[in-house]
Length: 440
Image (cartoon, rainbow, N blue to C red; front, side, top):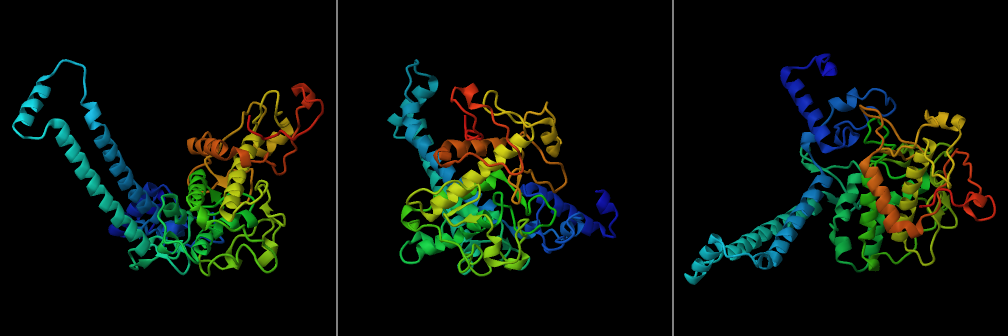
């Protein structure tokens, strides 16, 4: 509000800006260039977010992620009503003495009127049948207004311009998470697998170009829902979307990258809304093309992306890469801030812990968000300091470990000198670090 008071705005302009800021907070993406009329406003000067904030257009945006969630809400409500119909007759069975309501229901049945259980069943069926058409209409609107068949991606719809937007973000993956597929994929047949591959090509780009997991957007603005901030829920949604791909649409291996084929060249033209030169470079990378895919290995994997499996398809490879990157980020940030496992993993020394402003009394932190550029760093940005002890970080880590534990490699933490616990103390006979980071 102090910033608002310093602006030469009319009362209406102040009210509009406040509404935009409040709406931006309600989106959960507080804040991001995704909802700005001028997304490039702070690129190159990420210390001052005011130009980005003053251009917010949240109220003029129809978000693809929100509408995907609403679609699924209708589906789940219909399903719950179906369950109630299936159990209503059983629920009415009782061993208790008949009540007045039971007697009333019996008398109504004798007069040809529906019993209370029958009325509940009828009402539930009507409710379920209301929600299914609503879900179908929502899905049709998402595909009609938000799917771009040329760029092979989903975008928000802009009410101000009355047109589909062009700004790419992690919201693109929400429809696939909730099984909303464009006709090009849903009908199968020739070309369907190629479209599905193109839809997830940005995942391969992140694994190949960057050290961490998937960022909210590819614009570095200083806002906390922009590059390089990577949020655990998005990792979950991307992996779920990949897992939802029908097996007959993921038969090929992930393409081999090199001088002719790069992670950027696999994207449909214009999909990210940015040229390759506009993408942030991973430190130590330079130029464009193959030189930027510094984390891709000719063996068919990515740095800290796990070990390729025989017969692995492209979607399975991307799942493996993302799962390993996430567990690596979670583990290494926890370890670098004082985490240890008695008898298995020694804590870093006091001097090493100083790098993260931690002390020997620290027990390790699970951060709310991570850094696409740095595998063991919690990213900053936004209006508050980085939070730790975060539920969605813990929840996604547990889910990934439980679901994909068999394809996880031991994390390799950058710039951290891991001090191993002698295997002799574990009854294994010699010193080694090969168990560091494995699930226990």
